[in-house]
Length: 120
Image (cartoon, rainbow, N blue to C red; front, top):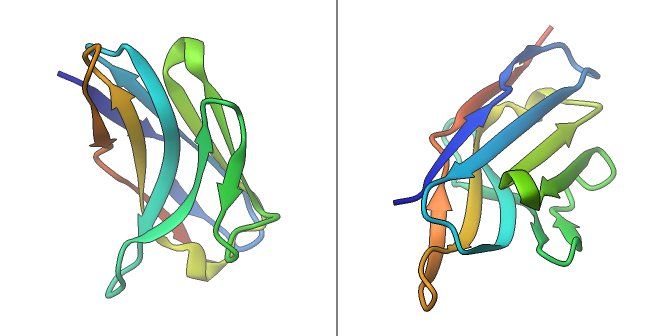
């Protein structure tokens, strides 16, 4: 089975930066897309952005220009570099990967979530 493990969350003051990491392990043939979602208290889960195996990344308008997603296919790892953080970025962040785990089968897998709190 495939497992995604996240790290890097924490408390940061407004204007600060954080970097999240998410590594996949297990039976992995290939990874199609890697991305991030977040859920703030009382809100629905929100797409943050993702990156395709081609290296093309897309972002939600709310984070564009401040957040950067990158991937290391050799390490099965995706990163989320968050700069100029705002209090409204406070949320639990989840990584998501679409992984081919057999020669014929692919599906989405989720990380356990990591808390990011932006507060003075």
